[in-house]
Length: 419
Image 1 (spheres, helix red, strand yellow):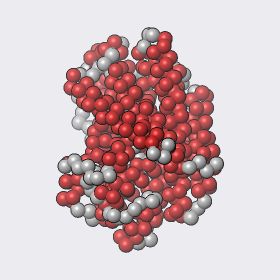
Image 2: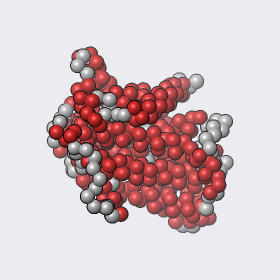
Image 3: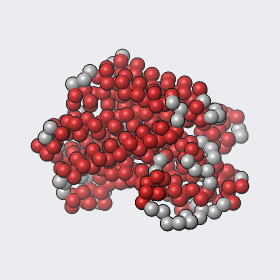
Image 4: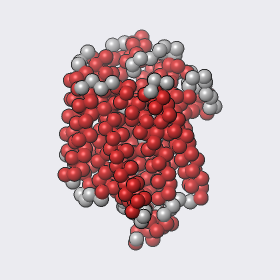
């Protein structure tokens, strides 16, 4: 490939702050994807149950996500392939090739259907508790909004919407944290001195598992190609990743810190419990702030889920024209419709979440290993393949993902069986 001969180069002129802001794009979609109702609820429970002690898990999950998403973005920019296409082309043995293809498509497709069901249900319950509007009105309404954006087939529109939602979540949750006036010393201790309090293991896994999401690797490898197609853009892509995912970590941390400050010791049943405790600080704005945050988190995560399913299957099947392909739109629409049906027919939210968690337990280690394997393909990536240092970091991350995945899978199965 000719573009492999082009080295990363320093920008011709010093970039202004606005130039750097304009670089943000694909990374923001990843952040919008993993900040959903599950992340909001998990971070709220972590803070309420263990104070600031689990902040280190948030920091660890962000570092892990940055390492893996950088690989996915580098694959898209240098190889000009989606992760699904790269997986398909990696193997020549027909059994390995088609076995891996169908494993990825079925797991991601079914997993995304389960995730969007949980996202729509969680968003609807949270908003219903705060506003009094019926769950079965809120859920389908959010689903139809997502369907509209998805069927437009415009990457730029989706990117702008996701960036806007990330900004809304940032302002909502970070302002709320500042108003709560947390203990700075406690925050620093929780972030940089790892601790595993009794009974916290499942929440630690949940905090990491809601951030490191398998279908986000597929989304990132595909969406970066809409913005960048030469090696000299790697620097911009990395800046986008560091800023966007860093902001995502700050949002998660802000939710945990706020709950640790104002509802420590409270048994959290719903994220709306946080709103009640914020009323002395925010007055009548408490419900509005919480409702806006939940809506933005739910809409962004639920929108990314069918995007992940559609881009993954499109990439594996090598469908052309990206988001404008009718087959892409069919997969996107089908995923959203499944989520709406699950909501209308009263599927138990916890069962849906556990099912998605079990699939994630199988998929995360497998996809992380495949990504690491592909990133060492010098025929595809040339000098931009993983270095020894990157491989060491990648192997550590893969081992952690494997442990978390197996633990999550076993835990979900035990819960299903009532053990």
